[in-house]
Amino acid sequence: MSTVPYPPQRQLSVGEVLDLSFQIYRTTFVRCLLFATCGVIAGQLAGIYALIRGRSLAQGTAGAGMAGMLALMQDPTLVALYVVGLVLTLIFYAAVLLRQRAIITDGAVGGELAAALRRTPALVALVILIALGCLALFVPVFVTGGALRVLLVLAALVVLCYGLVALSSAMTVLLVEEAGPVASVTRSWRLTSGNFWRLSVIYTVALIILIALELVIAALAGFLAGALVHGDVAMVTAFAEVIGIILGALVTPFYGALALAVLADLKVRREGADLAQRISATA
Image 1 (cartoon, rainbow, N blue to C red):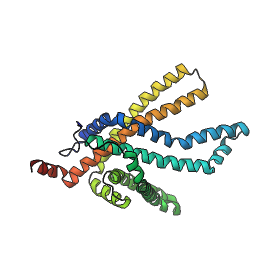
Image 2 (image 1 turned 90 degrees about the vertical axis):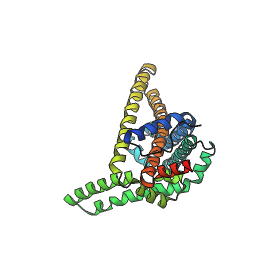
Image 3 (image 1 turned 135 degrees about the vertical axis):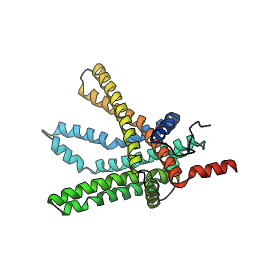
Image 4 (image 1 turned 180 degrees about the horizontal axis):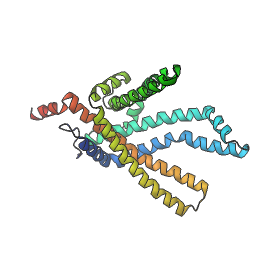
């Protein structure tokens, strides 16, 4: 039986949301590590291909740095690998989040990858919907100039920041509640309404913690690289890639844990989930 108090029985403070996130992370990390690692590797497919392709161009053409980059940008294989990598990353992240939820709610563990695959069309549609919304904010910027353009850019950035926070629970809603893309966006917007600054603090503190952790690990990795590979550029590059994958695998489950903790707290605040649980417990 899970010892994580999920869903929470009352509204949580900022510190308590972060504490719940770390509890979920510690409880689920090991059993989600394989999915997390696969997701990080999938996200590196285009980079690995570009690195290999860039080396071949450099060897075959003198001074081909910029030309090589332009060639890679026009390479259909690179574009295809980028898209495939993005989709696979979404699928494995979804599997991580679904497994975490199953573990902390004492549900049946297994079949999360299949469930994520079934939700892939909705996940992709959600990402496209949000991306189009973000791009639409900057359309007026390209048809104006001067001081007006600067003001529009600033306004678009402000709206973008608010929108990203307001839609931060959309993917979690889509996966946990099996809602459609539009319904997930609408529900996330409603749940986060009135909580912008509070959520901003939660996400900012979580980001600072992750950055500090990554800097410590990166510094240790740099020291080990210098000590073990003795300045070999190729080995240092390969070592850096491996460290990047390890860092991504370590961090990915925390994203899912934070998303689950935030959604649970928002539901308590906006929908009185705590009252319903108490009534059912005493019935």
